[in-house]
Length: 435
Image 1: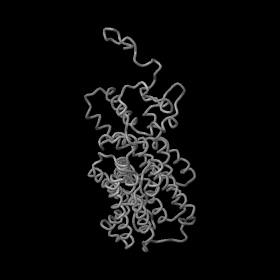
Image 2 (image 1 turned 45 degrees about the vertical axis):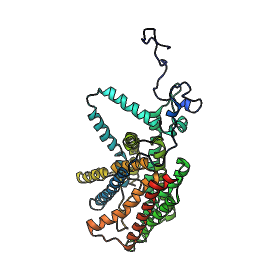
Image 3 (image 1 turned 120 degrees about the vertical axis):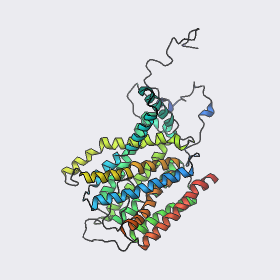
Image 4 (image 1 turned 90 degrees about the horizontal axis):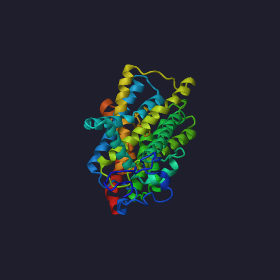
């Protein structure tokens, strides 16, 4: 064999000295087969296209992730409502910046725990092994081969690999997520809170629409009916409550058409975020939930790191122009912000609605991470239902905690959402296996 002496000792390096990356070369993926000289059996690389449901995803784990996500939404909604109404700290964009950045926290906790478990392993060796496992996970994503060559930009003479693809794709996803958040911030100044709530919670529709061309999904009639019922149920909850106060002279709602268009853009962006996360951060091979977790946490954390490093720039012109004057939170506000961050989202209390309304885009930390886990373990449509369900459960928590009796419209809309979720659950776990 070339590079070995008769005694079996290596005399020449296996890799050329000019080789600067251990990753799979993306330049080869767009042309000739990178495995032309590979002796690995072909069936090793044969795998189906991205599955809608990971075959090894246990329904109990999925149910646990869904419960944690909804619980995080409810706890956060109530805590943010307390911050804005009782503590008078109404800084939506600053809150969004803090909570978007907190997406990195679950990964930090996870990687710290993993390092503690392997504390006897030398640090450099442990980092190298972790990165190699991450490279291997990313290389099993179909989009890495199809989208990687044009997404990853490298200097001449250098090649891009799995980690380069992950860094680039998550940067794009961060921009999409920020677009959804900024759209909410802009639309809130022009349209009514009821319009905004109804439109943003229709992101389930956009997730379903994008899943067909981007993921090759085949939506069954149960899923289509479920999406339609969820949108109708959300509209019933948002518009059906006759106890809501509406001030016609209020600035909110003075240009509803423009505000609704911006809100639609935000809902579209959040639906696209869920689908692209499934496409770019989910293995195309059947994997167990435990195997998929490191990649999911890493991908979600990157959006938090990117937000922390860049989005603070927007706070400067907002402060200078007086749109949102930055005020450092007091110790009490920080305490409740931490509760909101750890529970999982930054949601707005909409003053002319009788209950706090969750915002689909700003679900962060635990909840947005669990939402990403749901998307990976199932599909974007099923994952997006967590936010829709939380609208009804927030109304119930307001009733149990503060005595705010839900209206008939809340019960009717909540019933439609629960029926829709039941149909979607059947189609996800049973119907798709039959197709």
